[in-house]
Length: 283
Image (cartoon, rainbow, N blue to C red; front, side, top):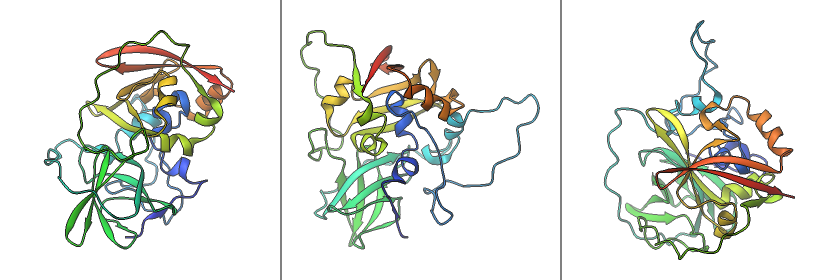
């Protein structure tokens, strides 16, 4: 199957389904959108006309809560994920720009560029650059099938290199540093530039009891900016400006509010604890 080319204007809407809201402080845009009739949705997603209004008395789910109902992230009764595939690093001139991994390696999608060429959106089974087939999608890498052999293509680490191990344990925390200034981000680079944000931060939805609980975020590039925002790899953002992610009804209104604010308040989970964080938006 042909992959979907990603243009600069299409990228923020078509492939930032969870990412921009995940960093809600920084982009707050959890949307699901079919861009053109010929665009094929990710594997397993059934796009149907809008259903009839809920029956009287039945609570209406917010748009963000409805995202959790999509089979993007797996379904109850789906067999457990098989043991991780051990495959050598690919020698193809491919670059893994971003991905959305579900609870099974055959779900999700990946954004891959051939050398320095155009970025394209792929799902499992798609052919990449006429040389390999996308076989599996994991949280930090994808598995390719080429000439009957499996190969690994990884997300770049925060320092710009590919991770040497797929499941390496997190580094031990550094010694406590002196208290620093209030967490902050540059509005022009985080809020107004969704394409850059998507390439800099990896986000993964966290589903609990069938509901969207939050989004786990990790730096892909420029870990310094990630730290300056007060974030740590593995943080799970659960609310923006006092509103749980799954309860945000009017995304555009939230964006308008963020545009006029100098600070955004988020609640996140870190090491089992709930933390409130105020992040300044600097002009």
